[in-house]
Image 1 (cartoon, one colour):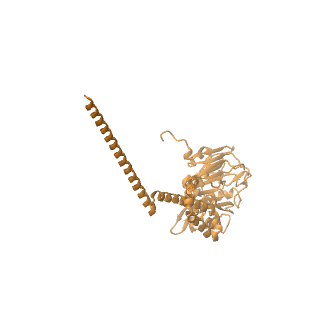
Image 2 (cartoon, chains in turn red, orange):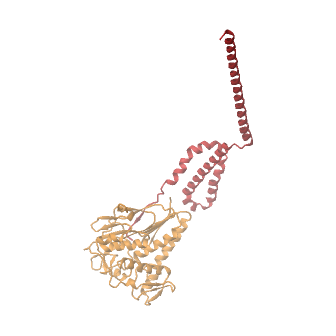
Image 3 (tube, chains in turn blue, red):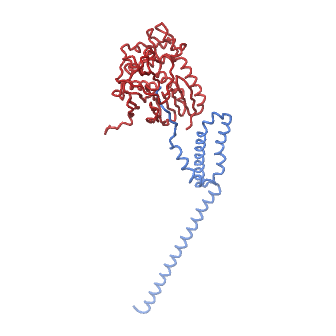
Length: 146
Length: 307
């Protein structure tokens, strides 16, 4: 191989190397462009959903929190009703007011749900679930010769 | 769970009724009136009561109120179930023993009468077999001269009848001078303490969600008889006098108060050897030596392997 052929081969190698770099640059550019488009499209969908008020994640949380809060208040109202039952007979005129107060509480507290949501889920549930397991204690009675 | 309650004197002793739930106070007041009415009808110490008039009536078939008919049926049932040991037609024998006038139940700690012990037996006359009721005609049929005494059977019957009235409440208990009917829709467990005939603290504790409990004994209505011997109200039908069987007090558990009364009295009359057979749902016996014998309920009995 003479000197001319040697230089020609070197030039050819540089050209190929340059072509490879160009291809890699084009591919990199296409990938970056595709990523940017996908990113923009995804956020576009999210934006539309948020703008129209249809965030599914937020809707499920709200429904769950509301149902748990209602369950807690229903159980609390039931417990309160059982506790005052003996008195209900004596205070017949105030029965209606007491019932109305018990029923009104869930509505009033439902408005404050977003603020109490975390507390409702983490703290109130164990109290509500533990109550039905308690055995009712009845006063003993004595049997004697009749 | 809190309960409304009423206590009052009736049937020659203390009656207590309790119920828990809405409207319990009004129901208890109605139950008290029902018990007072029953006492007026069924007292043998009141010559004007329906029972006294029946015992004097010379006719074979006598018109009777539904309550008196139920009592007569209960007496016939008691005789049938106990083979004549529990005999509600022994009024003459009771009066002959000295229990002719109303005798209020003695306070706790009364001395326990004692005499040589032997098991009781059925009466040869078995007048309870002649008792019948015609529900359509509304009459009681029995040979003239047969006299009946409600005694503990009437208390057990009334505890059941009033208990049925109170069954709609979350909890209830009817205590007719110691004969109990208890239960309630809540199905809650209640402790039943067994009284000590010697006047001490409770001898035993039962735990029930419903049913009847009755106690029969010889110490709380006892006296010295005309012959100077100790006497009491539990008559041995076979001998016609107070029974001394070696059992001084018997407590029985049963599905109803009336059945518990029959079992308790039959167990006492059968004596220590035969008493346990009369307590298939459990109970407590007190023997004349002071020994307390708990009889377990079927659930408390040890189960055989593979049973």
